[in-house]
Length: 558
Image 1 (tube, rainbow, N blue to C red):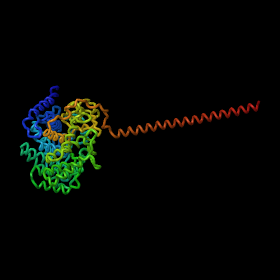
Image 2: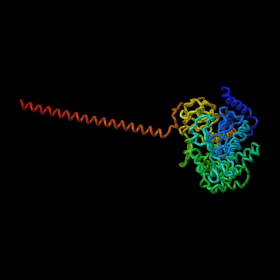
Image 3: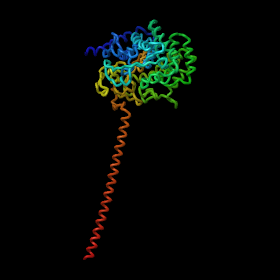
C-alpha cells in the first residue's frame, strides 16, 4: 500500500528529469532554455486532467487512487456517455465548460506547440485533449442532438466520497431541434474545430482531425438552424444552478471563426462576419469565460481578418484592462490581483487567467502590441504562482504553501459530507497541478475544504493557466516566484468563509433580541425600583402623618 502511494510522486520526479533533459533538443522559441519548474507545472496540469477522468481508465493511468467509474452514463437515453471528464470536485459532467476548456487548451497548443515539444509533453497534450474530444463526439450521437449534462446536481452534491460509490441515478440531459441550445452547440463546434486544427497540423493525425471536423460542421449547422436561438439552460433547467447561460451571440461568432480556421473555407468567415454585423451591438463586453466568448471571438477574428476585427479586439482588451475609468468592471487588489466585479467572488483566479491568455493570443498575432500586454501576463502569473501576500502558489502540490485542502471528493478520502473539513483532517491524496479558486478581495486565502469559492478546482480553471504556462516557457527561463519563497503562509484567522448567510442573519437577530430583552429587563427593574421607592416614600410619609396624628391626640388627652 505504501509502495502504491509513492508511485505517483516517483513517476512525477522521473518525468521532471525527462522534461529537463529534453530542453536542448528543440530551441526554436524565444527562450533558449526550458525552466524545469515551468516544465513541471505544465506536466502537473495534465496530471490534474488525468485525475478528472471518468469511465474505464486506460492501462497507463498514473492516478493510482482513481478507479473505473460511472460506467452506465447515458444508458437512460440508450446512448453511451462514459469517459470524458468530471467537471470539478464532484462527479457531474457538463459539455459547456468542457468545450470552453478544450478550445483554450487546443488554441494554446496551436500557438505554443514548441513548448510542449521542448518539454517532451506532446503526447501528454494529445491525450489530455483527446480524452475530452472523444467524449464530445459521444455527446453528439445525431446531427441535431447534443448531450450537455450527465448527473443530477441534488443527488451528486449530497454525496462526498470516492469514485467507487457515485450515487445513482445519473440522468443525462440533451438539447435538440425542439429544445435548442444554440450556445452549447456552437461552443462545442468551436472546441472540436480547434482540436481538429491541432491534430491535423501538429499531431499529423488527419483521420482523427477529419472526424472532429465532421462533428464540428454538423454542430454549427445545428446551432444555426435550430430555432429559436436560445441558451441551452433554457432548454435544460437542471443546468440552471450550475452553468446557467443567457447569451448565444458570441458562441455563434466563435464557432464560425474556428470553422474558418480549421477548414480554410471562406464561407465560414462570411458567416462569422454576418453574425458580427448582426450582433455587434448585443455582444457582451465583459470577462471571457465559459458563459461568454466575446473576447475570445474578437481576438481569434483579429488573427483571421484583421481589417474587420483587430480594432474591435484591441478596444475590448483596452476596456477590460482599464481600471481607472468610472465604468470600469475590474480593479486590482492591494496585492495586485486583477479582480473583476461579478466574476471574481466565486473564483478570483479566473478573470486574470482568462484575460491574460487573450492578451497572450493577441500578442502572438500582433507582436508590435505594447509592453503593457506582456507586463499584465507576467504580473498576474507571478501573483498566482506565489508573488502575493500569502506567499502561496495557488497550484496544488508544488510548494509547502500550496493549497492543502482543495474541494475534491475523490482526493480528500472523506466519506462524510457533514464532516468535510475534519474527516480526514489531511487530504488522503495530493491533487497535483490543480488550480484552486483563489483568494478574496483582501488577498486572504483560508484553505478551507468546504469553501468552494476559494478551494474548488475545475476543468476550465486549468485550461487558460496551462496555455499560459506554454506561453511562459516560450519567452522566459527564469524561475516562478514560489521557488524562492521560504516563509510560511501567514497564520491568519481561519474563519469559515462558506458560513451560510442565513446563519449569520439568525445570529444577528438573536443578538438584537438578546439586547432587547436585556434592555427591557433593565427598564422593568428600574421601573419596579422607582415604584418601590415611591411606595416606600409614601409609606414613610403616611407613617409620619400617623405619628403626628397620634401625638396630637396624646397632647390633647394630656
